[in-house]
Amino acid sequence: MVAYLGTNKVSDVEDMVARGDENAAFYLDAMCYQIAKDIGAMAAVLNGRVDAIILTGKILDSKRAVARIEERVRFIAPIRTCPEQEALAFAKAALRVLTGEESPAVYD
Image 1 (tube, rainbow, N blue to C red):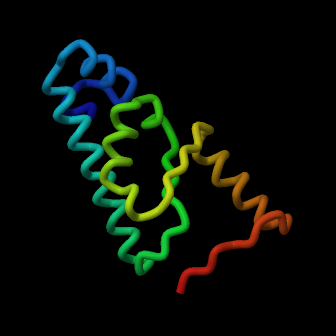
Image 2 (cartoon, one colour):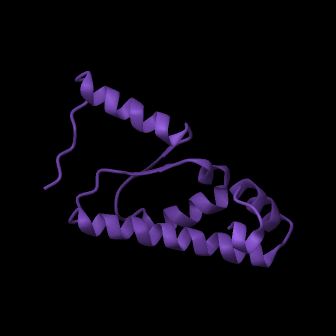
């Protein structure tokens, strides 16, 4: 996004789109398309056995981006959002497994 729009903040891009910037809309949609492709690729690696798709990070600042991703991947698995910082969310998930509060998923 920085190379094309001069910012790495999805909220800035969302603002550009809201002001009618078609270029910003194009690049935001392209980013969402790529994210959806990556989610699909990971679903294939898991043989389609996907418990959930987790969206996290600053992308959640853009309702448009989240909607664009959801419309392309919702058929794979339920979509959840974690508005916390992703590193903290992943650490909390690992802690739940380590303390026995949650069982780890095993993929073979």
